[in-house]
Image (cartoon, rainbow, N blue to C red):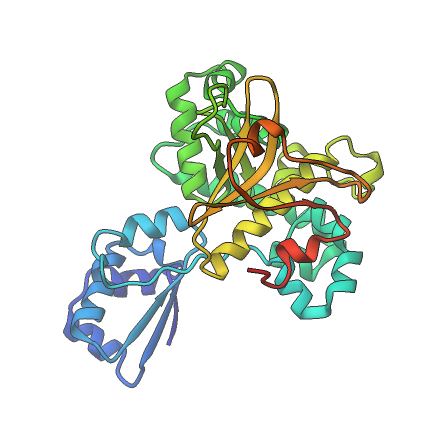
Length: 334
């Protein structure tokens, strides 16, 4: 049975109910799918009733707002649920769809317009659909959350983050830029993270005195959303001054998807020192460190700073360019 929380009669049916009524509603079904479940009052309690009393029925609850859905189900469904994050499409999935050669031909479009399903299906309308997604999801839906009340401040914060990809983020500097306070910035970023708009890459630090210990960078889960925020849809990458930022955001977000899909449990970091030595991306697994630098130019060279390599045991080092992208975010290499 497929139900939608957007329909008023479904909301009424599932908001305040009993196991007997639910058994009557779902008679003859062994799977119930509830889309936009976050729109239904007390949906967590309703699913708990089904799970505890109607054990032959499996419930799949989905929603366009991960934050709201988690809030409405987290406490009541503890120990009773499995969670699956449905990200935008991935580089690897599109390789499976039409091959590596075709996907590489579309790489410039992916860096600009991203991987939201509607964008991939209708690339000729990509800019229009990105604007719709940004306006409805980033602003309309997020402003429904209790702690986000100002459209202007939300827009300022998102734009500042979009322009700072690849650079260390300071909450105090963001607060000054957006004319607010550090605690407000921290609260908004926390909500944007829980809503799966952005994610944080913290700094790696263990031994070196001048390592930046509290540094962090913030990336977007989708390049298209990032570009929609700043209103730049130019797919001629030779004319974009932010190609390095686009490349870095794309690789880190795609690698993170890949790690999650393959259940690779790694800790991920950036590395910087006060002397501006840096490493783009580090993965730590069982005390082994894999170190990566990201370069859009296929002929670019890079090496690990001796300050880092003299102290830490690096098990792997690679420079990721468009030439070897498939080894990093394509088929599993671990």
